[in-house]
Image 1 (cartoon, helix red, strand yellow):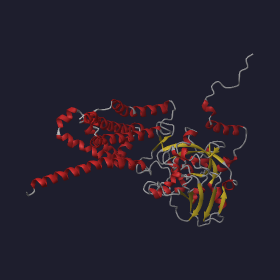
Image 2 (image 1 turned 90 degrees about the horizontal axis):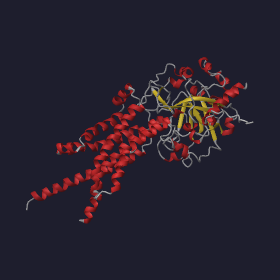
Image 3 (image 1 turned 180 degrees about the vertical axis):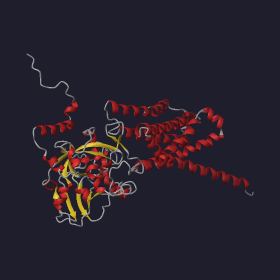
Image 4 (image 1 turned 60 degrees about the vertical axis):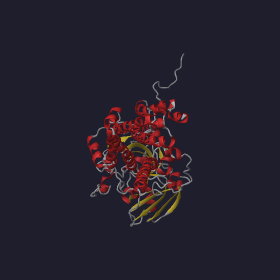
Length: 220
Length: 315
């Protein structure tokens, strides 16, 4: 019992770590971009606009990993205190995805309407990436306590959509890479583990339920 | 009495970096009455429109707002997958690469096939400095002061036979020296190719230097191709073999993704890459994008090579 209570406690430093991890990278990327152009620093290398865009996309993927890792970490490691951070990670994934898109539209293609229209209708990897962002939008909107209370079971159904996001995100990343797909492959494996574990649990749960039903209904 | 040192008060640190030095040196040479014969000579081979821009000591075909990209960017932002796929990889991974001794073989449909030590290969040709625009297929660009010899020089000396139609170039294959070749990112060794008339064009260079210095390893030492009206990946690096053929060479990126990278790969703002527009480019160091010029701004010199060709199909 003592042990159980201990495991429920959230390390104090963890709260800080989460807030730093979520809040720092975005402003930092924008800050170093401005610094690179205005002060001539080289934080983002020779092509800061492109580099910043890639970094933001990668942070989106990382927060998705964090959000999807919460449930396995609770079940497998007993870190139940992580539950409170799941929404934070999910919202961070959405906001970094949104920032990634805005960076592309405002800073990279610089609101070239014709190019934006063509990218969003003709270029598969951009359509896929944008779809991932659109899928995250209702999840972000319904992430409040009020929405959870109001939607009840439907909230759970709706938020299963989150499993689609990493699939779209990885396809988007994979297709955008010229030749070296090492990073997309690495994250594919991570997501395969995170989603595969859920699939396996679902199958197991169904089977044991089925088994129980058989026992219950069986002849005696 | 106070003796003032003869140092201008407004001397900025940028004025002692290699780039401006490099540029003012040309003006100094011209002012001193030394003819830069190399460039004057080469311009005789160019169409008249081009020649107008090629006054001795003036860089090739540059627009007034084209300023050479700083050395630091040219030597740290590189696509050279033999030394890693990140732009910053080659500068680090190629540090220990030894570009000498180096042997270049000229072979195939020529009367005089031979292997040369690099020094002997270069010796008979006039070394020239030329500032070219460099447009990457990824929609970024630079302005680079190259130093090199005309490819046509080398080819003429090898005496192509009448059947020769194409030139195929091959990069060194040695995974122990080029660690990126341990991974099957592309089919190694890297191969590029040109039609013979493109190869013979006076703008086409075999480059051995940058900013008046020896070519850094990450830029393709000791010998690379520069074809300024084509996307940068046509400029194959660390060349060990030049082969004349009667069939179109199978080039590395064309083999890797034929629908994205064609054999010609001429810079063309009207033909998009399947995944992005080529209408504009981001000049390294600039925030706002510039419009991309047809044939990267060398249309006057090279458009005639492609007269009557459908550039949408021959991308």
